[in-house]
Figure 1 (cartoon, one colour):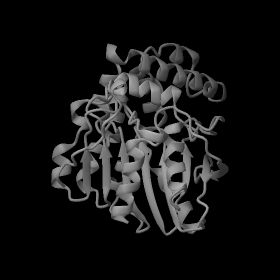
Figure 2 (cartoon, helix red, strand yellow):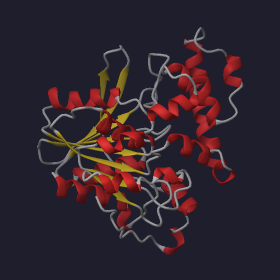
Figure 3 (tube, one colour):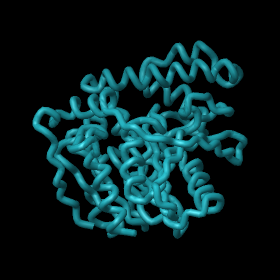
Figure 4 (cartoon, one colour):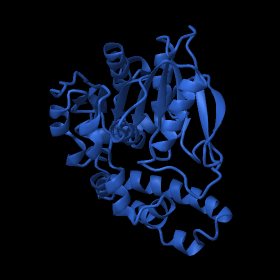
Length: 319
């Protein structure tokens, strides 16, 4: 599909990628009433799902996936949920394993390519909740999961109508390298601190799987993926995890209308994370590359972000 020309124009003082990223992550607030449901998974673990509903009872639902070390109360998730609720669409914000304020039950947790949990939520929404029209939207890590899910399967449930991926690290190895550069040191250190803190809690219950010395050896995010992510989820090493989990290789097989919005000034993304060739050769894949927006920082008027408006427009057009 031809590349979409973006119309996003932020206020002048928010054009810097770093500024828009930090503002959106630390300053933005969204008020939303949510109801929590615990979904038991086939392997005995659980996911906490936070639901919000439109005033009109309907059969439409958007499933929202957060990014690395996020949760279902982050404004980049609740902002979308609130907008969709106001437009007669229910929303469920998924907390990945261990991200809802309570550690999950297994040694494994979540990662960029773990599509089986998304599949479980979709099946739950269809079979138990009765939704007949489902939209998927993910942010960053969650966006990679959605695109991988849509492209790796021979068949996607007919109820799934649209996929939307925002600030997606399509090529995980390249994005990982970007996160380790000096320009991203504040973000890198913040992510690492949160991940290591949670791993220390998990280690108390799984001392046979990982020891304190291994955790103390973690100095970078790459180390974390080497010591924990790859080992806990069946990969040979960090590079094997990045290679097998990147959605880039699955984009040509996507047969569900899908919108990617990646800002050109997103410091988390490497050149490979802008899949121009794949979009041009797949009629179901739409790629929008705004000049501004940073990483999930598409600030717009009235506290409704540009990517949230575009998500609603895209869904209305393709469902």
